[in-house]
Length: 229
Image (tube, rainbow, N blue to C red; front, top):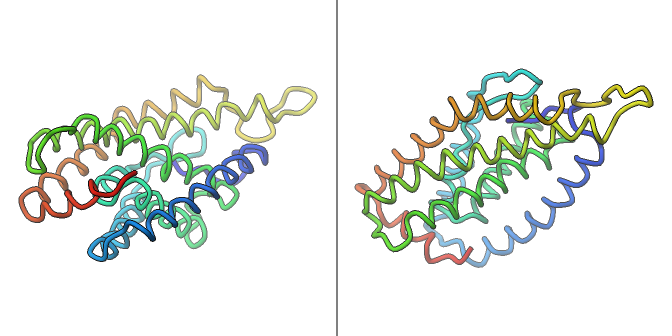
């Protein structure tokens, strides 16, 4: 799902950076006020986990990649704002040090994975698990569904960015200047991989970790619920 340099035009890159800068600012302020001492190491671990799991990516036709993100798990454990920071840090390090995702596309990649996926997954999880106890099996089901749906929502967001490029940026003769694939092709290429493979990986990992924590350290699952999103 990492978007490389040269696939998005300056307008799209500029808009996504303009959206993410205030999101990062708001997130940093909220995290500073609400993150508990015990959660600080968890924030670093979540960023590291997201970084590692995103390194296992498979090329998708059209120039991007498919992979799990770990964003929903971070949101469940830390709340959406702290998770946004954790995943953003992982994405920025990957772009700057490993060339995984373009520097001009950092805003777009963070929008899709650190904002869209994080918040979609968090609220899907909260909606399904509402009213259940911390050790309820419904929490595991909620984590599974949230992980699967949120990753695919993020993939859809990325595919829409790709699909809009031939419309927004083309020569007088109609040749695309950036991503050459139309909306239909981009959506099919992105969603087919994530619906069939990577969404399940995200779902299984998220559910298994929630199940493990229910038995070993349910306090970690409870702390974030005291933080208002």
